[in-house]
Length: 402
Image (cartoon, rainbow, N blue to C red):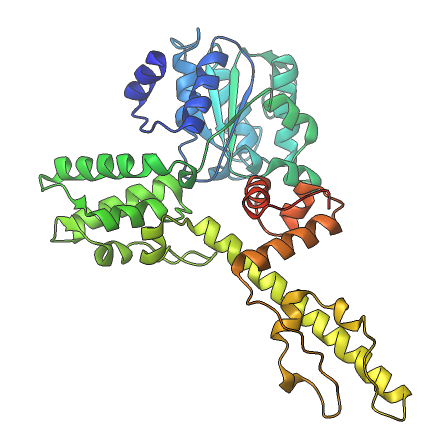
């Protein structure tokens, strides 16, 4: 752990979450090798620190480290930037030029946003990874290079492979050692530490008093979803420090700097007090919406069946005794009488008041049955992670074998 502490201090990495420590441990452990590393994680989580840690902890640390943002280079010039070109290779090539792979010989090259590489460049990169060979644009001479490649992306490469945007063979070459950087919302205990650091940096730079948060504002900060991760948190800390006259930040002040999220907005103050995360709230909302849509479908099916029975009989007919069993308990108890046409028979049964847990339990059981007990497929249908589904199954006492 002392090694990790030194690494964090050297690169300014703040946080003590288990997921962050595990990612750093993998980076330090793989550094002495020449294996390719693929760093994945959402935008703004700090993926760029990991190739620096790997390079500084390797035998290549005295040689060049070059970082390349593949998404910022136009497609027409990316091959020239990475592999170099000969004089006259294209309009404007007035002299020969080395590419990054040639410049970084003996060192490390970091390919950020690697999923943005065009297909032709992916082929060239694959050859470098397999053989260490490359050819300058406009040349026929094969050259060698000894470069350690670390790549990063916030794109789901498996999805990119399925859609034909990324080569599968290149993925496996890059992904020799995977490092997953956790999003900020999975590092709740680190959020306040990071906020204090960013606020202190701004105060020192502009010689102003440091802002602080009261208890409720801190809980709101830690319960927010942080779609932009550490980058967004830093931006918020800097904005508040520069704009607000008050140095003690309350929830009312903080809420002005937390924009509504597409998945449902910032966490309300009452939710923050209760320690409920936006992810949990969003999951429960999705479950409720989904079960209501299913219930509406059940009601419509029952009404059509009743109407058909009425048409076949000259006398008002009672519905079959087992017809009510077609509806779940929740549907029988809330079906409004106003939805039925005159002459229709409504079967009323005494039922207890539904709770949110009842609705969630019923929807999860349905999803598991539809997917033959496969949690991953059921979780996808319910718009939640497999880990959240497992927790809900335990909390609600659901028997998966029933």
